[in-house]
Length: 177
Image 1 (cartoon, one colour):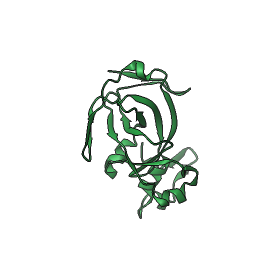
Image 2 (cartoon, one colour):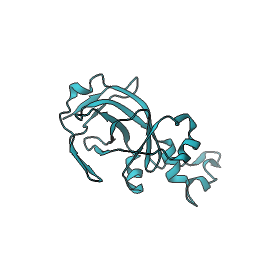
Image 3 (cartoon, one colour):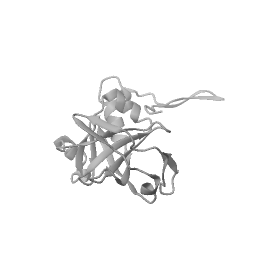
Image 4 (cartoon, rainbow, N blue to C red):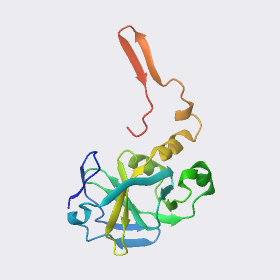
């Protein structure tokens, strides 16, 4: 089933969402009864903040599913409520009132997911979609690619270099390209 979600003044994209069983850490429940009428006019925003490899912050408590949109091959996982890490509150004080959710993915899988459109879908008690939040990923990308030695933040020769009067070389950092 193809679901259409209208994005505000950006690109419209069709999504195949939430039709398979979830099963992580003992949780097993089928997400069903989704149809395109339920997504027409669905409230959406950009309030989800993926800050570290295992932590997403959201403005409200609830039941959420993280979705990686990749054409007709979407993947989804259930997010699990967790205590907000104190270091995150210190680093992101403007998000201090948000609620933390655990992302049960390995680091390599997260890096793969970040190459696609990622969104959080809030679900009702009967697993119907309530709203959608496109995920802000800048902080998790920085955390994944600049926290070790000899990674992106140690590279100091990024940018443009004139090779000769007719040629320029560019060295860029684009981990999700």
